Every structure is written in C-alpha cells, then in structure tokens.
Amino acid sequence: MRIAISTGGGDAPGLNAVIRAAVLSATSRRWEVLGICRGYYGLLGEDDIIPMTRDTVRGIGHLGGTILRTTNRGNPFSFPVQQPDGTFIEIDRSRELLDNVARLGIDAIVTIGGDGSLKIAQQLYERGVHIVGVPKTIDNDVSCTITTFGFDTAVSTAIDALDKLHTTAESHDRVIVMEVMGRHAGFIALHSGVAASADVILIPEIPFNIDRICDKVRDRDRAGRHFSIVVVAEGAFPVGGQESVIGDSLPGQDKRVGGIAGRIAWEIQHRTGKESRSLVLGHLQRGGPPTGYDRLLAMRFGGAAIEAVEAERWGHMVALQSPHIVPIPFTEVLAEPKRVDPNHDIVRTARASGISFGD
Ligand code: F6P
Image 1 (tube, rainbow, N blue to C red):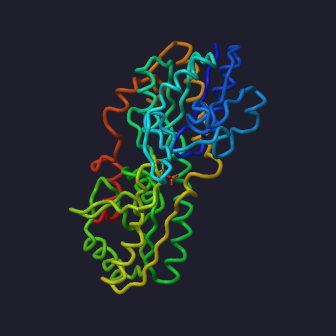
Image 2 (image 1 turned 120 degrees about the vertical axis):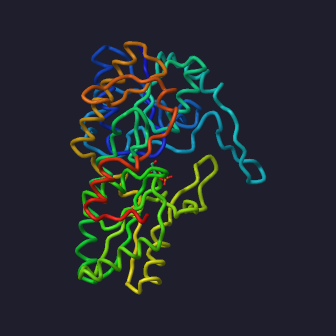
C-alpha cells in the first residue's frame, strides 16, 4: 500500500500532529507514505513529492504550520496561469494530476483541508481517486464535525489578546475594537468574546446596527465603565450592508475579507466622542503551537484517516461526533456550511451576561 498526504488551504495549528499520527499509523501497517508538497502542487510538477518515514515526523507534533507546506491557490481544476500580457486565466490541470497519481503508484490520498480542499477532494473522488479527508480550519466552519483542530488554539490566542487589551483600554478609558478571523463564520469571535468578557461581539450571522453598538458604549460610560472591548469577526456586516473586503487577493485566491474593525472604531469615536482604537489580530491566530486539545484532536484525526483508508471509505471525511471519530461522505459535509446558530446557548448566555451583538 502506498499512500500520499497533502495539506491545503490556510494553515492551522495541529496540521503537523495530523501528519505525524497518519505517518506513524500507516508505517506501523508497513505502508509506504509520500508527502505532496504545497497542496497539490507536488502532483502537478510544481513542487516536490517526498518520502515520509517515522524519522520525517519525529518531534513535529507540537509545532505550528505544516512540514508539507500549503497554499490557497492550487486548485487543480482551476489553476491560475499567467499569460504573456500579464493577465491570468484559470485552466483545468486535473488530468495531469490524475496521471501523476497513477504514475507514482499512489493507492490512496489523505487530504487535510477546509471546505475548499474538501470540494477539490470530492471532484477527485468523482474521477476515481481513492481519497479520504481530514477537516482543518481555525474558522470551525466545516459541517458534520463538532469542531476542527486549530480552532481551540485560535480562540486561545484571541482570548490572550483580549485579556491584554482589557487592561490598556481600562487604563486609558478607550474603546478597543479587535478583529478576528473566521471568513463568513463568527465562531472565533463568539467563543473568544464570551470567554474574555467582551462588551460587544459582532458576527456575520447577526448583522449589526452601529447605533446599538454606540448605545452599549454610552450605557457602560454612564455606569462608570469608561472603556469597552468590541470583538468583531472579519466577515461581520451591518444590517442591509455587505462584508468588508480588502481588494488585493492574488489570482486563484478567494477574496480577502477584513478591514471592518477600523471602520467600526472610527464610527464609534465620531458618534460617541470616546477615543477608539482598532487592531487586526490576523495571522497570529494561525501560528504557534497547538493547544493540548488541538494536538489530541489532530492525532485522533490522523489515526482515524488511516483507519478510513484501511476500510476503503473513499470520498469520506473523518469527523468528531463525540465521543467518536466517524467517517462522513464529502457530499454530506459539503451540503451546507457550518455557521453560528444565533439561538445557540453560547449566544443566549452572552446576551444574558449583558454582551451586545449590536442588534
Ligand atoms: O480560513 C482560514 C483563514 O484564516 C480565514 O479565517 C481568513 O479569512 C483566511 O484564512 C486568510 O487567508 P490568507 O492566508 O490568504 O490571509
């Protein structure tokens, strides 16, 4: 048996722990393992294919990033290619990829990625590739799994930042607006905001009204709390408005969501007269060592992926459905994206604790 492992999309703390568990589980079955470097680039002749042994994965379980490297631009079905005039077109290079899978004698692929990578995996599966998926994203927006590895680490990083912002905001009687990642999902903002006692949490699932945010800031001021902490998910948007986009993504990449924190801080300062600051926590949320929870989940996913290969569960993603890890068909996972339920108990508890959602 010869399997290959790929990591695609944005990195997430815990990727190396998945790789380690998968390689160790596979080699203990006497299977051969290859690493496809940089998403699928390695299978398109644009990067390397490397042998993975017990030595390759020694001492990596606690490290952030991915030793296989990754990309969010390598979709083989719409691969960006620059033309002589500098413009880009997207071409389908899947035939080339399938030929390389056959040429290298790869019996199965384990793909570790988010919804974008899982969509590619489904297309490869439909073309006959023996493939299983492992859910990865700090955003926690993959359906059918209670959580993804990387999310807990990102939330912990955000909580740490919010704790620090609290003390400086209070010292200066300021409003501080912190933007966290999540694309179209508000899980990081919600979980970190509640755990770190933010005053306002803004998420894409609950469009906000800037007047309500300012009301909250003024109410706190009147009550003698002269500072406020706002956590905003990068994809949050006002009622009737649209998410804020940073307009410099590269060909083949999704649009870059973000920039909302600065706008909200500006509005608050101009409407309430209170000094306001903003920051974007950014890629700090994706870096650093995974938390203990993420390491263990990642290891479990890696081991379960190899069991899924052994059981020939092609076209399935391993998912946490506590207390077990179970295989779920890609089609079921991709049927609808996971989003915060505005009536979830965490939202209700937040409201009961006086946190405003700006609605
Ligand atoms: O999906 C993970 C994620 O970190 C999102 O939260 C964020 O919008 C995006 O990736 C950022 O990607 P990039 O690496 O292109 O900046």
